[in-house]
Amino acid sequence: LLVGAHFDSVPAGPGAADNATGVAIVLATARYLQSVTPRHHPIVFALFDEEELGLKGSRAYAASLTDQDIAAAHVFDMLSFDGDADRAVELWSPSPTLLPIYEEHGVLAAMPIQPVTFDRSDHQAFLERGIPAVGIGEEFESGDHTPHYHKATDTFDRVSFEHCGAVTHLAFSVLESSVRTP
Image (tube, rainbow, N blue to C red; front, side, top):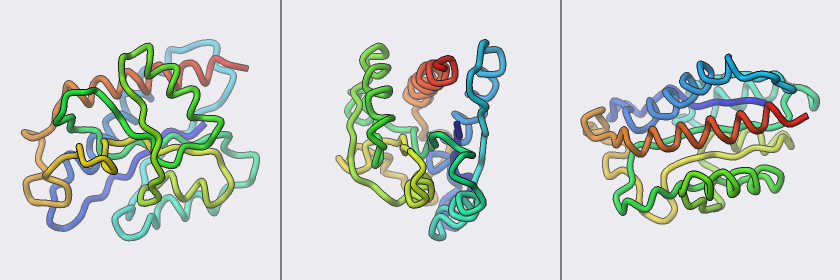
């Protein structure tokens, strides 16, 4: 399994929401999963550069993989805002095998899961290679995303740590279940 996020930002934006929040979720998940046993699947934790310049880092990494290297990619991007307080997250272009896992754990976490078609994040690099993948992000397509996206105001004082924490716990639940399942 791959758990990833991009660490770059646009020149105009410091990148707290886009995408230090995704990086934080990847690092927290790595720390959490180190104590989970038994693990039936190895895990790769990856941080990609140049997502903002056309998914260059994730595409280079995905191109280096064989069909057997990664069973599924879970990519976290922009998880700092919940303006309508509905706790929802979007699943960007989720592979059919991954959507039910997130829906099940979303119900348990009281977090609505909204699958949408969205190809502008690093999950797309894996989908292009035929690897099951999903992007997990704010409600970008429905309009409930940070108003500080790609702006100089994309700073930590504008991050909802409550929402980011809720998504982090969703990640723990989904990924723990995934690594424990033979």
